[in-house]
Structures are given as structure tokens and as C-alpha cells.
Amino acid sequence: MDFATSTSYLHSLGHEVLAAKYGLESIRMLLERLGHPERAFKSVIVAGTNGKGSVSAMIDSIVRAAGHSCALFTSPHLVSIRERMRVRGREISEEDFARCASVVREAGEALVNEGKLDAPPTFFEQVTAIALNHFRESGVGLAVLEVGLGGRLDSTNAVERIVSVITSIDYDHQNILGHTIEEIAGEKAAIIVTGARAVIGRQHHEAATAVLMRRCLETNVLPVFANEPSRVEPGYFGQIKFDYESSTSHYAQLVLGLRGRHQAENAASAIEAAELLNDSGFPITREAIIKGLARVNWPGRLELIEDRPAVLLDGAHNAAGARALRVYLDEFWPVPITLVFGAMGDKDIDRMAGDLFDIATTVVLTRVKDARAADNARLGNSALNRPRNVIFTETVKQALSWARNVTPPDGLVCVAGSLHLVGEVKRLMEEADSQSAVM
View 1 (cartoon, rainbow, N blue to C red):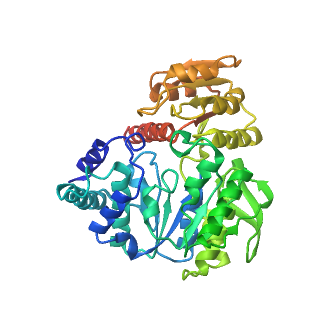
View 2: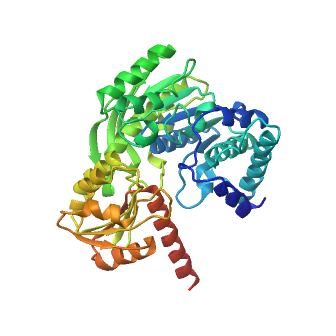
């Protein structure tokens, strides 16, 4: 298969979330058929409701700053599926993706033909296997794997790990993970396993902390708890400096490449994970930690495009993410704001709207091209009784055009509510830039 054929095949397997089969039997059989690519390197697994992608990117950046060969697996992607798998900071090439996808497809179909599986592995199972196979081929020493959804039954949990990291736990995907913090935390806590170290990030629900502690006792794991950063100071449009007292060292005025005060807590988890890796065969100096945090880049999370008007892209795909975005906007953007908003139908849209809609002069609602996306009627219900100018658009392209037209040059267009929405806006802006360059 070439790249286009391989991506078309993967999407033919069904929606990444709606058609997912949660369990480890298929992915374990698939990895066994592939000769266990996951055993060719060591792994760090990161789970949580919010911040897991940022923490994964930070750990990867730190490890690479220390001179180690590191791979990064994340989800979802914004523009291209190639974003999900990076080696030494570089996205997988189309050629490598197509070749690995062909190998994984053949392995999955062989398992079906032999009667070992009733159906081919799912989209996410095969994408996970593609990444692991690519990492083996690339000869990396360490891979940082972001959990897709939950933890206990996620494909990444089939991989042996030397460090498990749990970021902040909050309400999200209740239809899959459970309707209480205890149930959600239980799903995510399952990545803590006997024989691996664990980092517990700052928790804002006592119930989540209790569940995580119980899991550590059950697995005989002594966890490292991330401390609260101090002297958090804002910099350029919300890029921050902070102090941190880790388990082994003191860091003064760390500079973080990502925006938002909440990223200081994510950085605390990344620091603790890096120090555990230093004790586990991957030497990492304080200087590498400092350099890695300053260099980290994570698109679609308070990503600022300096234009007139400026455009801010932030997934903010659940209630906790929306709150963090609101705190950032309140602190750093005392200008007219136009909010472009679209969300998945299984999210708590009312709570998200409660945090975000009131800060905007104009709210532009749109439906993302995804089977899970909420339609304009659902989005509109959340805009009722809010004294704001609300515009309904049929496409993301229309929404972006409207927003740019109604926002003054010194204002801000904020795109939020879904990483799928952010990805579509990034694609549209990249296409526009390419056309301008040709002209």
C-alpha cells in the first residue's frame, strides 16, 4: 500500500472512538504476530484526563535534550496521521508509514484467516502497532506513549513500561469510563503496574487521589507525587517561568515553551518522570531538563498565530480544559475576542459554554466533520440566555472566515472545543498560506 491507500484502509475500519473495541486481547495477539516490536525499547506510558499529551511531549523533549534516541506516540492528530508517531522529533515519513501499515494489515488479516480474531484489529490498535513497529525499525532506546482513552483497556497498556505517569483526572468520556471520578480514576490507574515506577501528577479531586493510592498499594509501587510549582510568573503571551522543588533537586525560574499557568503542573510531572528515568538507565542532567522544557512544542494547545487579528488554537475539549483556557484568556487577552466553537456530542457542552461563551464578544458555532460532533442545534441550546452575538455556520471554513471578518485587527480569534476543530482550522490556514506563497 502507498500512503493514501494505507490511510484509506485504516479509516475503513470504523471511527476511532465509536467503533473502538476496548480490550487488550487483539493488540497483544497483533504484537505477538509482529514479533513483539514493543520489546525492542523501553517505554513510558502517560494517562490522565487533561495534560497527558503535554506531559508526553515534555518528557520526549527532555529525553532528546539529554542526548537519547526517543520516540513519541500521541493521539489524536490535528492535520496528518503522521503526527502521531515521531522519532527523534521527526514525524514518520509517508513511505515508512505505508510500509509499516502494510505489515500490520497483513498481520491482522492473517489472524482473522487463522480464526484467532473475528475481525481485523481496530483503527487505534493498528495505528498503535504501526508506531511500535516504526520505533523498533528506527532503533530508539525509549518511547513515550500517550494513552488514547482511559488506560486499563487502551492498546498502549499492552506495552511493558518502566515509568507510568498519571496527570490530572477529571470528568470526560463518562459513557465509556464511568460516571464518577472513582470509576474514571480506576480506569486510568490501571497503567500503574508492578515492577514499574509511577508518577502521580497534581490531582484536584480527593477521590482520584484515593483511587490512585489504592492502586499503588495493590501493585506494591511506591509512587512519586508531583509537587505544586511556586513563583509561577507570566511571560510573553502567557509563556511562563516557575520554581520547582522535585524529589531530588531544586529548579529556579524554569522557562516553559508552552503557554498557560496550568502547564507548570504538567511540567512538574514531566520533571519527576525524567528524574525516575535518570535512575533507570537513561542519564538525564538538570541542564537537559531545563533545556527540554524550554524547547518543548505541542501544537493545538494554546498555540498562538500572531496575525491581525491574532488566532489562538486550543483543544479545550472538555470542561476542565475549558476552565484552563478561560483562566488564560482572562489573564492575558483584555481585547475583543471572537470564539469559534465546536465540540463532540458526548462532551459536557453546557459547562464548557459556561466558561467560554461569556468572555467572547461574538460566538461562532460550527460542526466539525466527525460522526461524534454535536450539531448546531445542540450547540445552540448552550448559547441560549447568554447575552452574546451568536453566529451559526455550516462549515469550519465559513466559521473561520466569519470570525476573522468580525474581529478587529487588535482582537483575538480563539478556536476551541475540540482538537478535531483545531486540526481543521490549522489545515485551512496552512492551505491558505500555501496558496499565498504560490501567488
